[in-house]
Image (cartoon, rainbow, N blue to C red; front, side, top):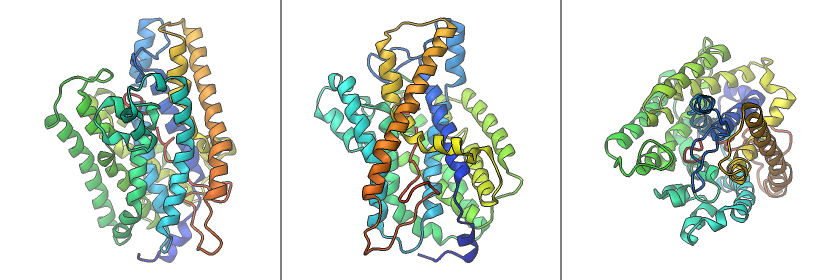
Length: 411
């Protein structure tokens, strides 16, 4: 690997604002899940709790693409923070051990909870739940497999692929030099995302229609769930980290501009053909938001995102996202298909939010932190492994999703 330049090493700052920003991405997934008209858990009853049809429709429309935006954010962020912290000479085995520790303990706990509470009676056999256990389930096009057990865990299948490939991907990307090369390859990644949706639209069978989306199940799998198709976002994140580290981030694209772009991109996603709202409509705003926020941290600017409460919310965002299969889908199923007046429906959503935050904190405090502290550190005789982001304890890694956030129409 090519060594870092002194300027890159000097700029390798902690990224507390990006940590805080993670919570808003996870929150967008939460509101998407809460607004669903079709639960990913059979019999696919509505999640949306509003009885007034106009309010229910407005809620579903307003947050109809929020989950997709949040998940895309986390996939790009995953590449960014890993590239930001990667150093020449770190051992691949140590890197992979830490990344697997990051996702599997939380996943296994929520997997067990989902199986006990609702999924165990729904899966028809070992072939439905076993791939989910090992986070390879999104390589199957069948919804009974790729959205089995805990639906939000679908995104961890993509994260697992990212981690396996990162040690190989970072080598040629580190060799890229110059503004033109880095921005050119970034544009190529965006073109790849467009190509995925074009293939899904014109070459993947458009029947039978999915029970939870307006396109076919195969199109949804190929264009959204299949891990290989999400690699373009991850690689874009790696390239963006190189752009910021090399000092090529355009100063005119700050947090204000990136927020405006995000609003415009989201508006475009709402009116674009369904599958182009997954990634294509919002990817430039997502890239701008991540790059501008990281640049603010590099320059040491004081943003509210780096406050202690926001950093804490960002730290629990992975668990907050992962438990939503239980705290939203399962708890909503206990209420049946009942809908409620506006005040009561808002209380229901507030209850989902409180339960999700509590579940996220419990996972962070009693599963994630102990696992990383016990097993995430390098052995004394080996070289220490750098942390991908600044964190309050040794061995802390950035969450892979709100990482990462939804499954099916669950973000």
